[in-house]
Length: 95
Image (cartoon, helix red, strand yellow):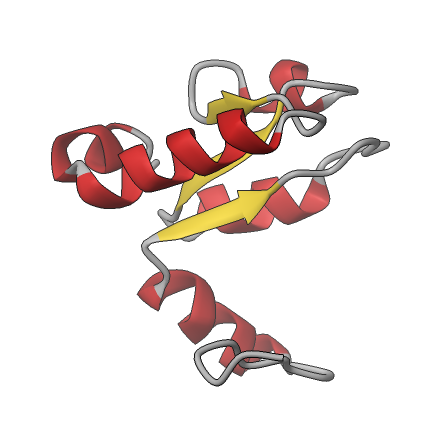
């Protein structure tokens, strides 16, 4: 457990909306996603998305997300650091 990580329980829609809008990026390294509702939620609020290149996500997000290999920790780490440190890139994915 780290002091800089906050684990949230249930979040109502109002608070969820605020969390998405204040987030620099929505990181979703899933191994399987049937429809992609979490990334759609994030994109609809203008949050940049970094997500898995597996399952239905590339079809749902098209060119509106930065893709990672969820089996490759180095790939995830580098791309997350890259988008967090590059305002121009992040703005590209703020739909």
